[in-house]
Length: 400
Image 1 (cartoon, rainbow, N blue to C red):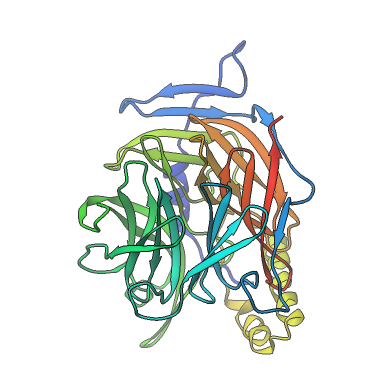
Image 2: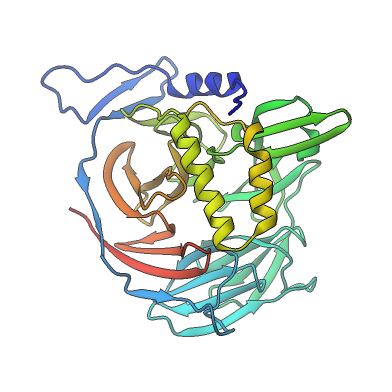
């Protein structure tokens, strides 16, 4: 196995991790609080205040792989709770918003594949605010605004000058954060790179308010052979994740077990850290991940992918450390949920819940469950089986 040095990742990790003094003798071991010279609150937690449990079985398990219809899902891009015991699923496979009651009753669908004002072409993101439902599709480069029954109202485009632009989150003040990154052909240096994305703030009409800042958002590997260039994602890494907060937005990226929070103008205000060492990418971790992907290709009888994996094995590069988190979301109580990184084939992972910067709770979940929304003690998520068949599941959790 050949591994390329990852100097950029080490620099980013050092910048993100920092140094914080531990708690003094006699103080509660879980929390230590500091403020640096810039007035940034830093909270270090050694352990969660509570251990939460997910219900053994979902109270709703919705999906079908045999019959076409509203419960046959493919390429789910999001799912959100709505008012009046309802939820919506963004199903990119049919370019539809599908509406259900929490008991699984189908209420109807909106959208469809096309260029018309109510249609989608590449449905990629949904968000709610008040009684409005927003949906973005990259093919038509627009965000549509509907009521929470799916009735179309208007659409707008995010104002920008260059680059690939996509919405990130809808903040609590009604403004949107969007991310602009370079296309893969614009990454000119060979080797492993940490890509910096430009975050911008926009009004509900799409008008740009200002640029917020540049943040590390992904790892890319650029291979060059003369004039030919191939750019791929770095295996065992993950992209950055953003979530709204009461006073702006929060963000996770890289090997540090921390959530960084900013005001709407991009000034760092809070760092919520957990005293947890970064996990190195050892040869056995690489072997396990590779064998898992190879077995998935064989199970799916995808011979081209199997051959491609075998050809690329000797030239793959990997990060020095695994990412701490792979997702971030905010619940209706203002708490932040960060999903721990899970290795391919790992049966279980955890969501770490933060409240006002403190590590409130740890919730173990099936690694096949992608949590998409949390309201009260209910979780709405996408569950995939080993072959990638998609289902929508609703669970309850108990706060211990």
